[in-house]
Length: 109
Length: 119
Image (cartoon, rainbow over all chains, first blue to last red; front, side, top):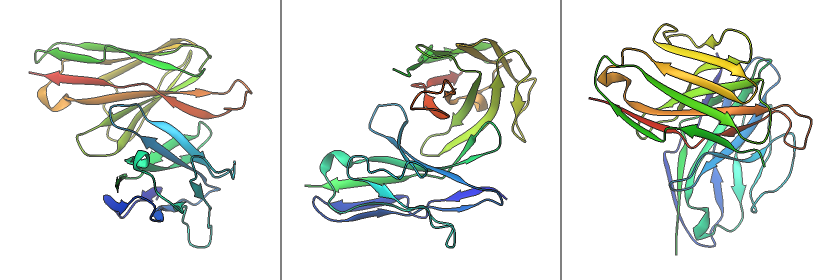
């Protein structure tokens, strides 16, 4: 079965603390993983994708096929990072996305 | 670049009426668009994949006669909720896939969503 699991509904940290948003997936094929972010009252936007292997706004994510994970990390959280984060799995020829339940990151001053 | 618009942003209708939601890619051509549904405090659930010039592909459990999808051009897909009922009230979001060969190849760009309330 194709599934994306984000175990934490809410992650609350203080500014400057490290952040790790967990994501695990289940997929029999070759996965393409994404992290999307939704700031308050804004549309969903791509944060990063595993094939790019880049760092966006200080966030990184490494695909671990052995653990079927794609955790999102940032060493020092900022208040402006507060948002809803969705992990997504791209599947099939049209690369349709299967989303996790989302994790709300709250960064406190 | 790579902007997707939706219209209307919010609609309230009476039970039994039909509602059409438009999704447009403003500065790129999208042979494939996707329609999602999002309930309050829940994730996005894919409803269907819309392909230009052909029939949409619906996800399991989504009624194709209830949610009519038309993708008549490379920049426009429409979702019509037919004979809407209160349980159809939700946030409907579309996305368009950019396959133009630019740096955002195969990336999905999301619209702002349409909030449907059926009375």
